[in-house]
Image 1 (cartoon, rainbow, N blue to C red):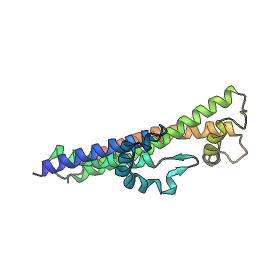
Image 2: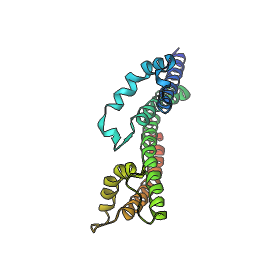
Image 3: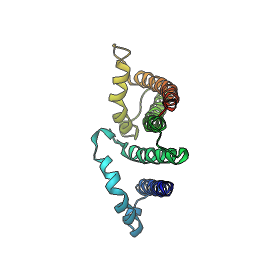
Image 4: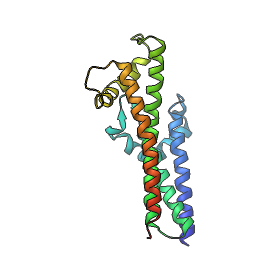
Length: 197
C-alpha cells in the first residue's frame, strides 16, 4: 500500500515539475501565457513558483534564479521518494545524501550560469580590446557581474583591478569552487550512505 502511495506522489511531483518547467518556457514566448492553456498552467504553478520569486536573495541584478531553486526542490522531493521506494524503507543516510546532492546541483547550476556569463564577457572584452559601447546589451550583463566580480577578485588582490582582470579572477575562482565542490559533495554523499540507519 505504501509503495502505491509513494509511486502516486512521485508521479504527481514529476508531472508538477514538468508543468513548472513549461511555465518557465511560456515566459520566453510572448503571448503564450495569455492563452486559455497558458492561464491554466499559470494558475496551477504560480502559488508554488511565486513563493520563491518573492525571495529577494534569489534575484541577482537582472537575473531571477528562483525557477532553478523551485524546480530543484521538486527534484529533491522526487529523489527522496524514489530512494525510499527503491530501498523499501526510510533510510536517513540516503535521504541526507540525496539532499546534499540536490542542494549542490542547485548551487552548481547557479555557479555555472555565472561562470558562463563571465567567460563569454571576458572573451568579448578580449576581442574588443577591453571596450564595448554603452548602448550594447553587454551593459546589462556588466551591471549584473560588476559588483560580484570585484567582490570575489577583491578577496585575492587588494590593489586596483580593471574589470577584465576581475572577470578572469572570478571565473577561475568559480572553476575551483565547482571542481572542489563536486569532490566534497561526492565524498560527503558516500559517507552519508555509510550511516547505518
